[in-house]
Image (cartoon, rainbow over all chains, first blue to last red; front, top):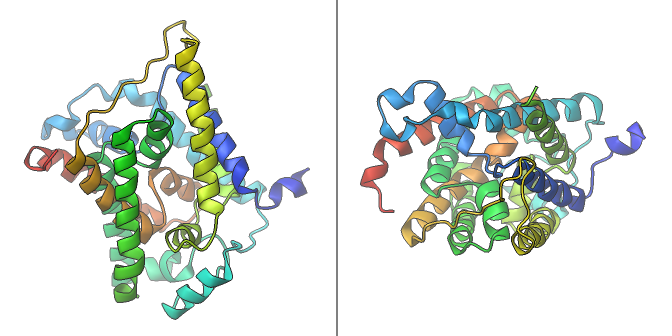
Length: 185
Length: 137
């Protein structure tokens, strides 16, 4: 059983469980949206004293912070007990495209060129992660949600605004992938 | 403990995101290069099931575990907000290979360098809050 679970799981397992998580949260009277936690964290750190946007009862969002803690624990369980540490099986075409940028084929879950501590603490690597994360945080709040809030919950509810947000996600992603990355790497 | 159910839901989410490799930078790159069905399969399955779930909840006016009606609040319409915000989000998503959920799952996976992206994401959220009135919505 454990050996079976240690294999990479097919994509539909993820799709099914994500929908299940959304259903469970709705049944608990909540809604699935991960990036709201970033706002809650700002508020919990006292940002409400200087910025009105963070002046709300963040304790009412504790449930979502607990979900976040669970997500971290889930990642830990997966890496410690359910992983054989094998490389991500991405397509040959992607491996070739990335090698042209100087990023070697997968050796684990993440590329060494970005995620190894050595790279992350070089100036370039540090800025990639910091500015990338910054855009994710800024953009998610500006758009009023991230992948979970818009691409999953919003589109499930047939919300046109969510579809527009997802189109935006792809515009930005394609610009980074095809325009910026050849300049950066 | 009333919060335990949310932790368990999060654990399930974290495990499946890891095991399906949705937390991998490589998988996100592959998606934006249209070189594999994998990520589209994940999002597509979740959306199709999500549409069915949402439809059934609305049609049968299902209630949550406390007996309150499950309500879906329609999002306010705006093009600049979703398009500009979404595009900025996408720029970062492709660069770090992580949206907010997977960022935290990666901490559990012990890719410690992702903490830099998390700090960036919190700072980005703060800046949005600080200047939001000056942005087109």
